[in-house]
Image (cartoon, rainbow, N blue to C red; front, side, top):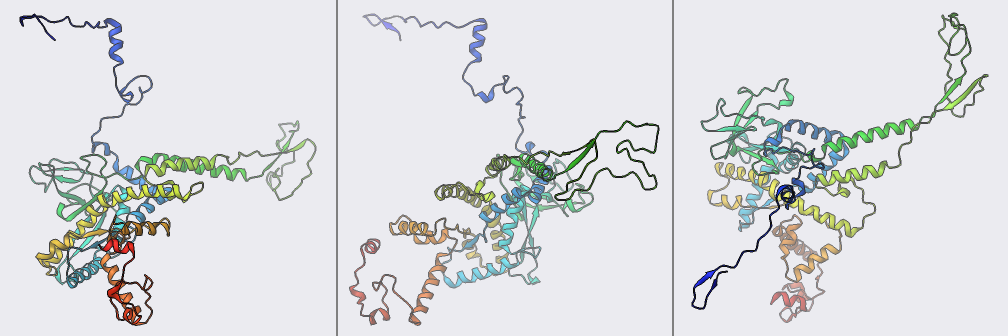
Length: 528
């Protein structure tokens, strides 16, 4: 700050505080200890850690090898199969279903539901599964192969389909790992990266698929004769990108494949060691006699006369349970001392598979079925955390990348076939997806908690029903039908103990004046 005299003239600045700057070696040392992350250091501890600065797609080098090893682990290792199996069952269950809530007219809604049900039965181009079975298969292919593809196959109207369209599922191997700036059939300005055709703006325009699975061909050549260009509008690409700009997917087992192989080798070695430990072998040890080595008729090991017509006699006796053999002079018996099976085997396997489960996003207890030394409260916390991750994968991968894509194809095909009018197409396309609901962890406390939330107004009754994977409209229709049937059969009992609010002939016959009905406090609070 400057200083001024009485007449306002500036007379100068106060001297600046002088900071002594280190020089020479001291200055270099000072600069070297500036604040920074330890992970950025290149000292003795981290001298051998030099990862490359690979981009999201260069890092996928060797993707086919990763896929092959992942599938081998799933085929031959119980842990790999369990990981994929548990993920598919939790993500899909019996199926993720659409609800056409925007269609209010019941007759129209029922017609759309019937049309979609007919389509689900004919959806698979291979003629094996229905739409919900395809959801499970495409999820399994995504998990063990890193990605999967669904291709729209258009059909002629006279082929007998409810909607002239089917869905063909393709493994990750079907998309060629092809990079090209120029290629036969490639439009000018477009490029192919990892089998995906991109325009100048980086938008996906087409996919270059093999005509047949490369694993089923003797020679999978990447050439124009073996590839077919499929527009991106006819392809659904299901994968989980780990980095922005990543074009292809990596198997979910990739982070733990190396440790899985080591665990499997350790398990095999322990099994062989246990087999050896079960062997109980005795060896006869004798003092070799001093023989004339020039006499070929005397065996050096046994000292017996060799009968060349019968062969050399076997010096070892076959072992039998409880056998005690009298030995000759200068002979003794020594027993084998095989290695023990190991006392830390179970602890090692459990600790190792804890890492396997964590690396694949599964709770160890769910992957292995081992729930020892864990309370139900702890298990509830673990399961709830896992379900949050499962819902993330449902709503960010399975539903938008596959389910909604197939529904869009269904709407387009139904409009072209005249089954859905253009006016109601948008309402059908904007269906609400309902995953298979989670089972209650506690069959009493969980429903009671939901009931309290509804009564307190924290959530709607429809949301509780929807969370179970059911359609609230269908549930209400079923309840009304059940109540009507019970009344007709004389089986109906008022759940409020004769204080029900509905005006029925049965209620009037029982002497209940519905006009004078006074609701309990909790019911009255909800109706005000």
